[in-house]
Length: 123
Image (cartoon, rainbow, N blue to C red; front, side, top):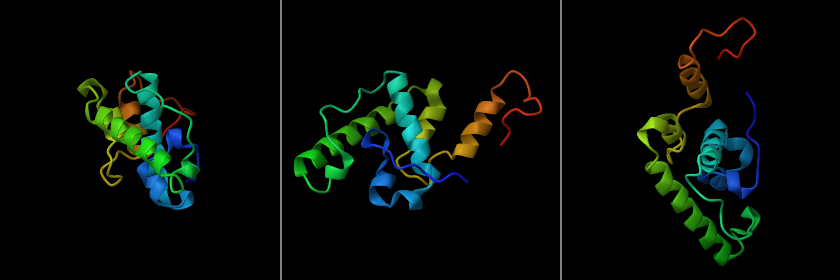
């Protein structure tokens, strides 16, 4: 299994904020990918201002900025159109209710018009 990557806050989930990066696993990666897709679909803007996740516990102003952005991501995630149900399942705030990477891949493969050929990605 791939270990989760520690990345800048733009792609860090609440799970990643609460635990050491190497302990939280794929649930945070799925959430971060979902947030990235929110940007791709232009459903949420990039965080405003220039702040670093490392400053969150040190600076109340930065903590407030991050919290406001997370609330916005959560609100938008809950309002994702039903046509993007996989995206909505990627953004579940509870990691135990969030779709796993394997489930995501399998659901996407099931939508393909053909069965994967030998050598294609199969999970």
